[in-house]
Amino acid sequence: AQSVTQLGSHVSVSEGALVLLRCNYSSSVPPYLFWYVQYPNQGLQLLLKYTSAATLVKGINGFEAEFKKSETSFHLTKPSAHMSDAAEYFCAVTRGDFGNEKLTFGTGTRLTIIP
Amino acid sequence: EAGVTQSPTHLIKTRGQQATLRCSPISGHTSVYWYQQALGLGLQFLLWYDEGEERNRGNFPPRFSGRQFPNYSSELNVNALELEDSALYLCASSTGGYLNEKLFFGSGTQLSVL
Image 1 (tube, each protein chain N blue to C red):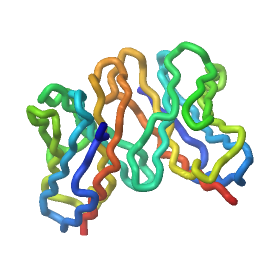
Image 2 (image 1 turned 45 degrees about the horizontal axis):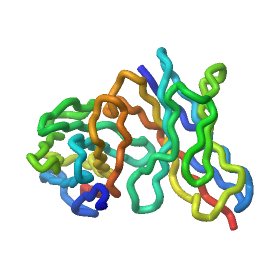
Image 3 (image 1 turned 45 degrees about the vertical axis):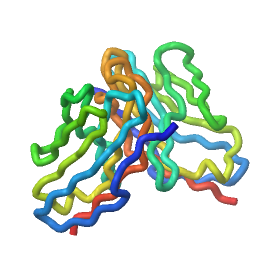
Image 4 (image 1 turned 180 degrees about the horizontal axis):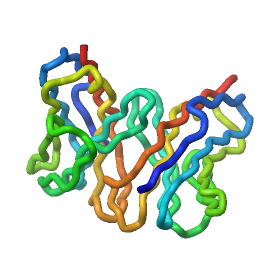
């Protein structure tokens, strides 16, 4: 079985500061890993995904994530936070031979940006 | 191009009643997924429909059911509502379910059971 753990249900950073949202995964096979963002009153949008190619993945809106097998981590970062980044972020895991119904989501991290 | 649309936006029911939630996928998408997003629990997979057939269901009781219509829109029915069914129900669509095609989500139906 696969799972993800998101450390910190709430994270607050100042505008312009580094954003770091943590995700650790558990998988018996090479995983596919995703970050989704949910803005208020909207559905989830795909930020980026890792599918066993480059370990540093760049996504939309200046976000990136690095797959670290030795640490079983896929943390999401952004060098400089903007007010518009305030949202809930979900990490998800599956395996390459599975379909979307096997996506396992974390419980989410709510990011607050302090002006 | 229209995104995934869900209706109604909010739904208030009482215990024991039935709820019907609707989803229209992006044009050209044949797969529809339903998720439950309960407070503090993340997204839990409910059901997957593709080409009109139920392909898989998550670990939910049979009173959660649904269907997919010939135009690929979908309905989620929840019978005998319980208080713990209160949650945001999200629908997502994709061009196909087998190769991790990108999911597009609607903004959800907030179901409140009183």
